[in-house]
Length: 122
Image (cartoon, rainbow, N blue to C red; front, side, top):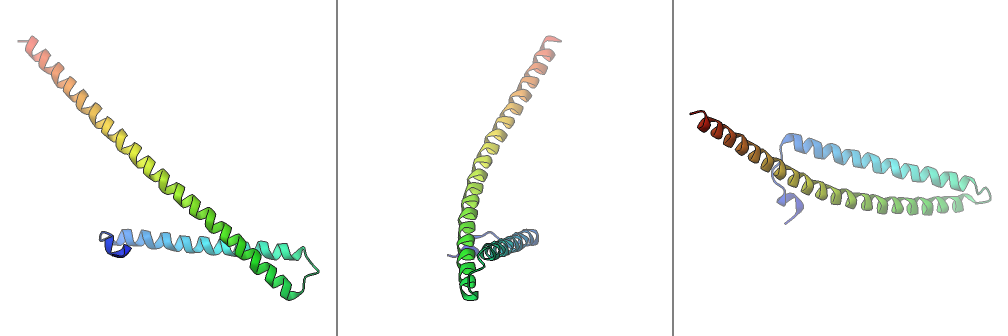
């Protein structure tokens, strides 16, 4: 079963949000690749003795190394974000359970107090 088959049907808002997130990711990655190319050009500009072919090779290798490193860093950040999302979801669930329990206890205490007052006022 593919990832598409396992997903629950999504509405237009969900599809739009997913599409915008993909577009944003695409644009951010292209900006990172362009930044790597710019850094490679700046690096080779410091080496004026390189021939044109050597310059192109150095830029290509530098860009490939830089984008590979960026990919590793982004994967690490993504994994950490997913981990934090799980932790915060768990904490939110526990907090919600505590709040509901506190509300039930307070409502019970208030009801009990009203019952005692009504019983004593007879």
